[in-house]
Length: 181
Image 1 (cartoon, one colour):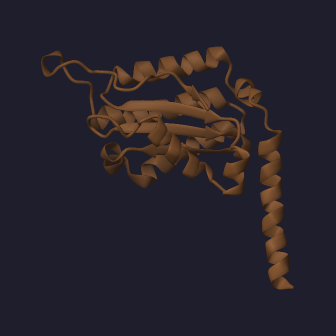
Image 2 (cartoon, rainbow, N blue to C red):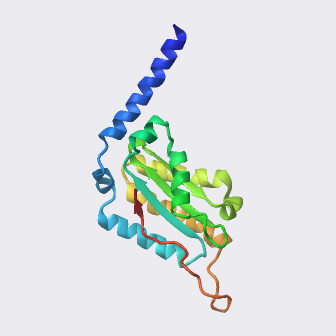
Image 3 (tube, rainbow, N blue to C red):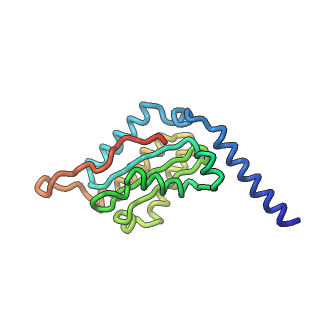
């Protein structure tokens, strides 16, 4: 009897999640991030990257597919896939950072390549995430992302400052435009 009840509770939690994802419309992204907001996020990334040699990407997804739900894919697992798909790991100094937001789960992840992660560490990313989460809970999605970009930039500036003219150009290795998945 206890095993049956335990399975039922898990299934009920899964059903709630499935309903959130199946009922989420692709327009949910536009509800939280207008075209103008996405342009401002892109500008924040570009302005940030002028000050350091790191790369920042922002990706937002309204929901997961039915197959991903059946497989019980988490926001973190999906963020890892997106990190790879967007080639955030593919920077000369291993200093790419992804901000991934999954709206249906009310969840997000900050993933960093090994170069910058060794300097910031889990506690540093957690601190940035906490501030972003507070803003998201207030419905300030654009502000939360821009604040996260700003805080991430502080670390990238500290550890990977923009190169001076005699050291070579600060190349933009990855696009700055936000990605809607």
